[in-house]
Length: 501
Ligand code: ZN
Image (cartoon, rainbow, N blue to C red; front, side, top):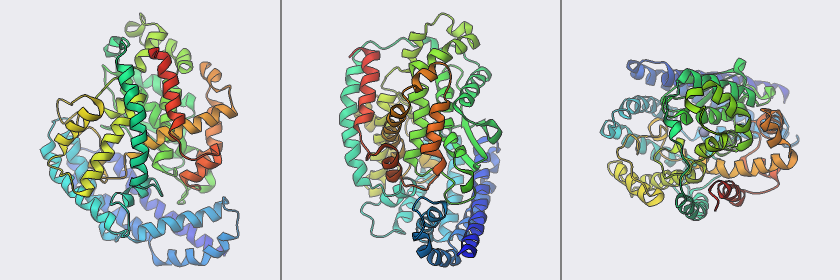
């Protein structure tokens, strides 16, 4: 069995090497590659993705997994070896359904579509990306068809990022969430809005960067095993546990964008950096799901980065860096400004209360596109209608409407957005468990110390990589199933205090 296990691991190293090389190319495309490189890059990524797919779905891996299965069953469930066999088998079975030719075709299309979107968004030119998006919808449907027997056509797409989660479950969950959030937004926006005019002063990007790099290192992000660059849409990727990259984008007159994106992406990045070294270059060396990943990013962005204890420590430092911009602004005014609740256009900049509504809109549109009840041609108008109905605000153009998020243009339609809403719920449950274990966390934060929180997350969540499914991890860490209440309770308590309702 040892020989077979060694052979499996050696083959998975080959697979991970190819996959990581493809990710390096995608990272480069989104950060440094000149626009002219898009056609060649699509070809190059397609070749690597095809080779990676062929390596993972080689029937020899299937045979090894079959041979190892009975032995792995005798090991403790959470041992590295049993988990490796179990999770690889799941991934093998999922990937083996897809022809390598399809994987290459999809990757090539996604790289070209991303390049078209990167040009089209600044020019507010939906017509430019429309044919790409139509093709993406076809390919997304084709992907689902490789998994016949699904309950909803979105299910196979959701399953890729949030294993075992179904559209029907999400529909119910999101209806609950919407019913709770909508009246809160009504009540809050009926109150006087906090003054935040000072956040539109000029904040040079070098100083924004100096500030957030200081903060994310204090959180626990290791710059010796990671780096930060700039891209049109913030993201995190990794090529190894020891090489994790994240990006931000800068807006001189809106420092919230880069600062909170950096806290958010650092949350993703610390999760990947915190995976146990023993799992390096295996199928276990990644976060377990989009939902758990977002629980970590949004935890650092919001529970830490938008909290009063955090700013009690960091606001004087931010003021020292920007004396002309913030010297006349008190801590309490700044705290209220960065927690301003408003009906706004951009998801990534949305406050904690309205954020979930942005996700629900996207999820609804995805399902309608996949079901065929909405066409890509009618998508921009459906977006405007959806914004009016969900958030009570209509974008003046497509740039800040249907073109704002990279996901549909660089990935599939379906499976990308539910993770953000699940992440809010999971994050609330994880953070409650952290506070229960260590009630001193907020007091430490006020001193600029995050070691207890980071250590607890590493111990409870990060180190395991994808050993446990989302449901298993949640049960292990909190003893509970997925719940809406802890998140809603937190929102009510925090914003009830800020808005005195
Ligand atoms: Zn994220």
